[in-house]
Image (cartoon, rainbow, N blue to C red; front, side, top):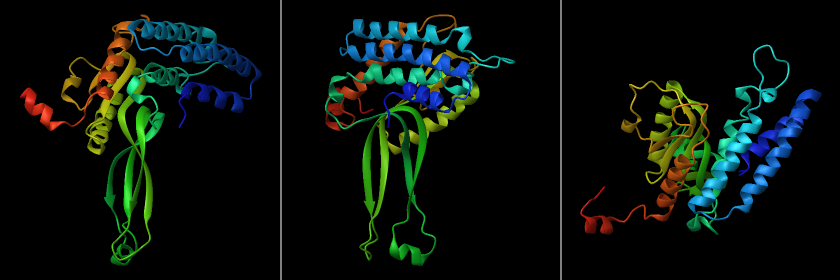
Length: 274
């Protein structure tokens, strides 16, 4: 699992690109990307000023790759379309830079980035004879743009057989879908995913991070399993990415990471059980 999702995306494009013009564009982007990456890795604090610096770097890099020469519009021979994930992968990699220095995650065996997040498992023996030999566990997963997750190895066997079935799963503690824009179809898909992810781990938080919000106003996400939708440019796509939105998101995740996810005794003391 790579932490540098955007960088990997660029490397893949450079490797498969056949047109010299596009190779030159990618080389230009990669040089700027390397600078962006190095500057982010130099910031190791978690103060508001540290987060502000990361947002400034993000806006600078996004402005650079948003130049017309990098866009492939209808009829253009060269450039890159929205389907190339050039912009969405920037947000995915930024999630790592944003959360990497949360103190409680230091020296933990954590997986960062894109993952197939665990949702549930079930038993599916093809016959009674098959059930004699194996537990026949099937595991369901959902692709996630970015997650902070833990790798778990599950082993199972039926009591009359010594052969173990081993499965590797990734259990997210924070699951984030990253979008350049969010429309109603995407939103509905995310609602379904959030429900499935939280059945697999009810202590996972599920966020959507989108540059712009294009869901109709009669849809209220408050009544979904999504914990929060962060609209980075607020009401206008021409706006910069707002530092206060990023700061709020950082604190939301940090508080979740630092909190006890299940402490019934403390809830009784507070007088609130949920």
